[in-house]
Image (tube, rainbow, N blue to C red; front, side, top):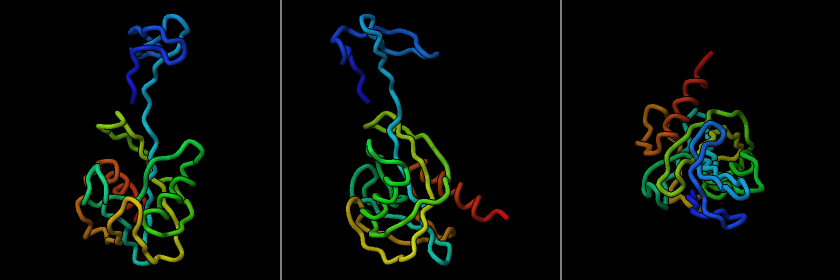
Length: 168
């Protein structure tokens, strides 16, 4: 998140103001508003034939060496579904098709201010894993034997999924 001091449109100094019900930095010359919005992230939920869930061991910070759902940032020209399929393949080698929306959670980020994590279920036919990109390992875990997941948003998405997938 960039906390601008000067307007990126006209270079005037920004002033503290009120817009859309919130305090924000505004340009008194051209009217530009410094909106601080969350960065969109997709988290992929994949289950195997036994109902175990796929996690990756992160090879990069934040939380390097810990388990998380596969996923990552949504690029400017991508939908959540396309970004999820791309990230899933990059990190696990799996080719998946987006299915049901599992949930959306906001999480604070040291680097980006806030990220908005969109959890999507992905259907995968061939479950042969091939680790790559930001992952050092990938495995399927049964719900009762899930390792510690450091991201609160991922924990919530896993809980959301397990709750809805076990409902009649």
